Length: 145
Image 1: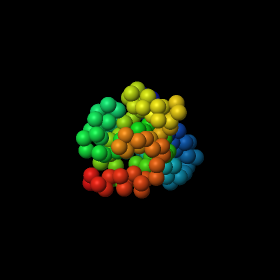
Image 2 (image 1 turned 135 degrees about the vertical axis):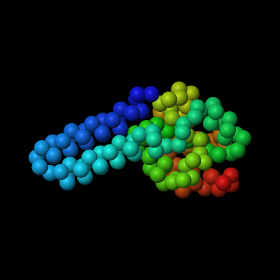
Image 3 (image 1 turned 30 degrees about the vertical axis):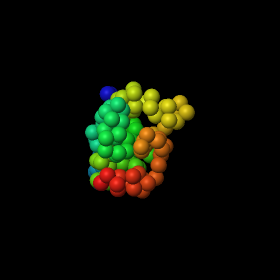
Image 4 (image 1 turned 180 degrees about the horizontal axis):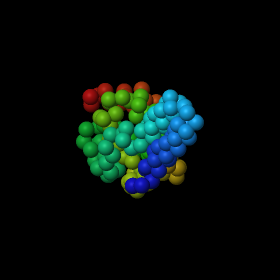
């Protein structure tokens, strides 16, 4: 649980420390700008921007019922963040599995990627696709949307 918050908290801590240093140097504008940038990085790397994660078993069960893709991801992954942002509101239609919280999800990703935990791995109709183009993922939603 704590592991997913290490990187965001590191961004907050570093941004705060640098901002305090800039305040003491008499640069409140630069301090505020830099702090906002670090807070934005913390937000982007936190699990808060992703839809609620569920377990791999539950996600695969739901996917077989309605045909929606399952996305295996982990916090701090720039490719996962890119996929999430580029999907926009349609990201809520996917089933998201955080492999740092779900050992079965991590095992599924390793099985699909020759033993590596390469994310995002998107499973559509039982077939894994590693780091697919966000447009392609969005197209996979159109039949069930």
